[in-house]
Structures are given as C-alpha cells and as structure tokens.
Image (cartoon, rainbow, N blue to C red; front, side):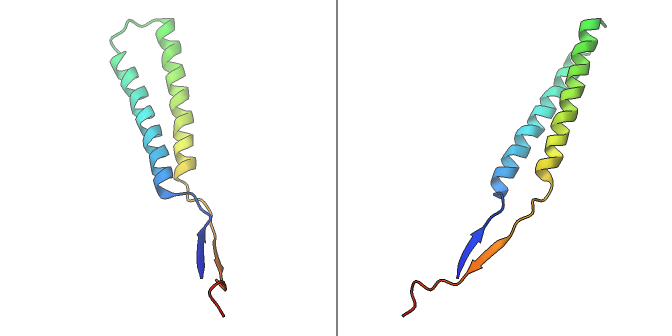
Length: 82
C-alpha cells in the first residue's frame, strides 16, 4: 500500500511559529528598551502600533499552532502484482 500524507509538515509549522515568536519578542524588547524615551505623542503612537502588530502576530501564532485537519489516503499498490 502507498501512504500519502495530505497535511502540513510539522517542521514547516514549527519554523513559522519560531519566526513569529521571535518577531513578538523583538517587538516587546523594542517597547521595553524605549521606556526611557520621554513621553511624547510620537512615542505613544509608536507604542500603539507595536501593540497592534503584536496582537496580529499573536493571532497568526494561534492560527498556525491550531491543528490542521488532514487525511491519509490509502491505496492498494497493484503495480507489483502478477
């Protein structure tokens, strides 16, 4: 019998999740490192943009981490039969 996996590869999903996690970490670091900057409208605007981006990245993480439905298709290999 032949085995065909129609789902997404685990390594691919893990790689994407790692990239998104790193991006969220970098955003959080930028907010923390900018905490010493004087309170201004520009700083508040930037902070709001970072918060919005983080929320979008978090949603992407949840989408990628959600188990994807898949099916296995089993077929009888008759190519070697007499």
